[in-house]
Picture (cartoon, helix red, strand yellow):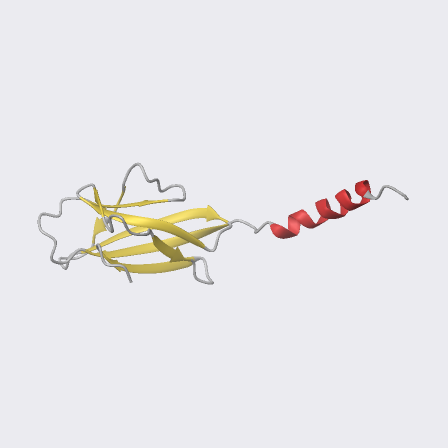
Length: 120
C-alpha cells in the first residue's frame, strides 16, 4: 500500500486559501440618541475592531440640538459584522448584556442607528 499522506496534505493546502475571506475597508456611520439622559458631557464608542478598542473611547460628536451624536469609523476586516458598545461620561451601556452586533451592509458604508442603553 502506497503512502498517500503527502498528496493528501498538498490537496488540503490548496483548499486553504478558499476558506479565508478577503479583507476590505468597511465604514460605519454610528448615530446615537441620548435624549433624556441628564448631564451628558462625553459620548463615546468602544469596540472589537481597530481603530476601536474596549479600553478607551472613540468620541462621538454632537450633531444638532436634539441629543444626537455621530461617529464615522472605518475598519479593515474580513468579517461580516463587528461588536460595539456606547459610553456616556465614560460609563458603558447595556451592563451585563451582550455587545451590539453591527452587521455590515452590502456596500462599503453602513449606517447604524441606536438609542443609548436600548438594544434593538
